[in-house]
Amino acid sequence: MFTAIKQIVAVTALNLRTIPARLGSSAVGVVGIAGVVVVFVSVLSIAAGFSAAMQGAGSPTRAIITRSGADDEMSSILLGPEIELIKQAPGIMHEGQTAIASGELFVILAVPKKTTGTDANVPMRGIEPTVMKVRTDASLVAGRMLEFGTNEVIVGRGANNQFVGLNVGDELRSGQQSWKIVGLFEQDGGVSETEIWCDARTLQGAYRRGNSYQSVLARLEGAGSFDAFKDWLTTNKQLSVNVRRESDYYISQSRIMTQLINGIGIGIGVLMGLGAVFGAILTMYTAVASRTREIATLRALGFNRTSVVISVLGEALALGAIGGALGGALAYFAFNGYQTSTMNFQTFSQVAFAFLVTPALLMAGLTYALALGLIGGLFPAIRAARLPIPSALREL
Image 1 (cartoon, rainbow, N blue to C red):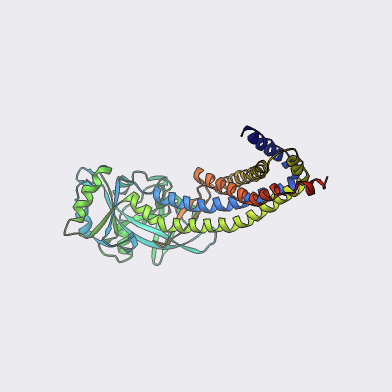
Image 2 (cartoon, rainbow, N blue to C red):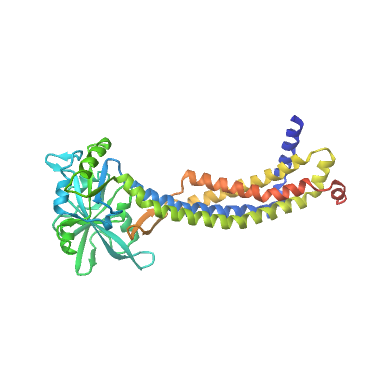
């Protein structure tokens, strides 16, 4: 057993030391695998960034209330008296006699993208004066807070980065309405940074919505207050509402898009991986062909077939690891933090987010690269072990 291990180590080390002598063919395999890993990791980083933007907006100490049966805010409607009743529920944080909750309205505006100039759907959210006490993670980064009762708005940092004409001092026109931008805000990189915020009452009048809203965002006394809060609302015969933690709501909102992007990324990775496998097979066949005499000599000296197979697979894994590390590094430096926006198909509005190359994605890319190297080296390894010693030695 010890002799067999020594043979495996010796032959594998010899293979690895001779890689520089086959640099051209080895580079083909490494570059092919690296290319697959770059695409694989970069596409999946879109899903990771989108999911982080959506889920980063949610807090377990906040709750979203919508009409019962509505999957999202766009398909919900709540009347003014219902909003006031919801604010009376136990478990909502209060400041004096004021419930820390914001009745909100949601409309879509067409705003040109900076990258293409084509119109995209940007959400405008009507809010109440309590909003900054509800969304404690939101803060102004430029300008000032809007004055309620006017056509002033504040714009999320993500929307400001991605769309035209959303700077402080600009006027945003929608139909016959004109909105003056007086500030920029951020909210920990969450989905709300793609939104434009205005006074809910002003938005009701502009879009002839009467005394109606689409949701209530409430800040709870604590995460443990949610169950009592939900029970009171869902058992109240005057209401017909759906109550969810904000964090759960945004997880559900991101699920379809995340699954779609992941599916596309894995599909592309598999298709490109097939090409990389053929490249790895050709690389390793070339390596075996160039070392036919060496392998035959080793076999004649008493080295067994297992050591030959493992040595070839070891070389293939080493090339896969180099390609995986190179591809992961390229994906990280090229795409991590890259700002973009895409359509959220559940609300038909744009969501600005940044590509997110996580350690888990880098590890997945490296694992995939090793798998490609292993598959690519399998058949050449078997061929190397089966080389007839006499005919191979005649090549000396």
